Image (cartoon, rainbow, N blue to C red; front, side, top):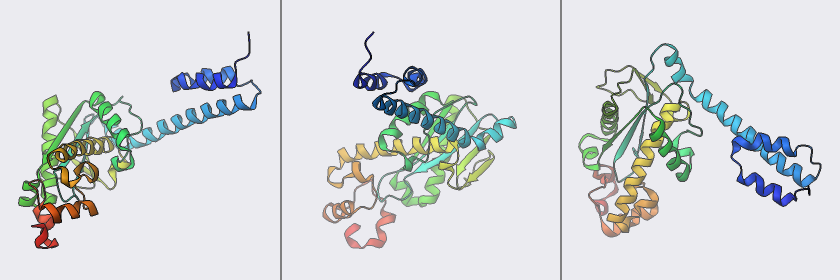
Length: 262
């Protein structure tokens, strides 16, 4: 049988799922051609990267595992997106996973690309025991301030878990303690990068809010909401000066910026 060309071997690797890399590596590990060994090394690096990610995810479950081991099986992660923008809602996510749920690449949503967040959103929605989302609009933010609006969105998200018949045993929150909630809470500083379920909640909140801002972009195309998502960019400030304030702007955030923004 004719020896495979190096290009054919490289093309073969591209067709494989990473679960098949071990067999590929074994097949070609004794091929002494430098080009083939370069391809084998690439496959080895990919496998090692996968193992490293699996280890990272196991470490990310340390808070959840502590409560699972105590018999508190319904651990809920809570996080929000959109506290800082000049326009749009604040959105909170609440996510409960089963003990055996595995999803790779969960992280603080800000550390992920938009494409990866979208992929993980779908996987979380598919695999989680329950997902709740709370949304508080700009008008309400102006009425009660952004901190209270964030708490309100979080309480809404927790309440939506009931749609799945789920009531958490404990809440893991990103840095805050939510008033008006009787479920035991554990605030974790930078929890979206330290906890599996908080990281998932941050992704749910971020993707939900970003999709809303893209929809608002179609409604108010002059403002560029699809790009900056309501944050105070140069483009956004220029649009405010030119076109004024929309119904989705947080007027309480703009009061200190002069008459041009009222």
